[in-house]
Image (cartoon, rainbow, N blue to C red; front, side, top):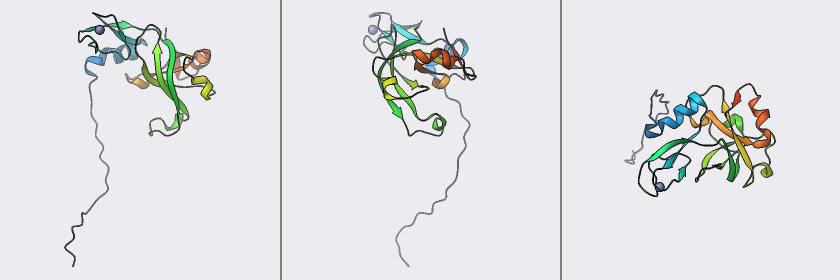
Length: 164
Ligand SMILES: [Zn+2]
């Protein structure tokens, strides 16, 4: 008999119900869920507008104040997604990209959906606008971006609605 160690493995599933907090970012998710507002923050010293919001300016190390930002912006960089997790598998192919909202100084990584997803639709500099889920739960998936010229079509679909 060999003395070589052999680990005995059992495959199983762990199901855990848990809660987590968004901490100082909670206001962003509450305003998104309840009022379809997209909030950034503005540094109280240098005036930089952070989107996604930071409660303290990473340049000045002072507090930043909550402000509502525009729901339109431009694509800074993007890619088409073909491989994803089970949560998004029904949506492929879709795009994801960094969106710089009008007036903001930093860009937000978010999903970009299109009825005719081709690379030219999601090029750098293309204008996009936020579309909201009708059933919002206070997560980043409560909204996504679409090419500005598809906005009216998207907000007339049964599951979605427009913001401001
Ligand atoms: Zn600052």
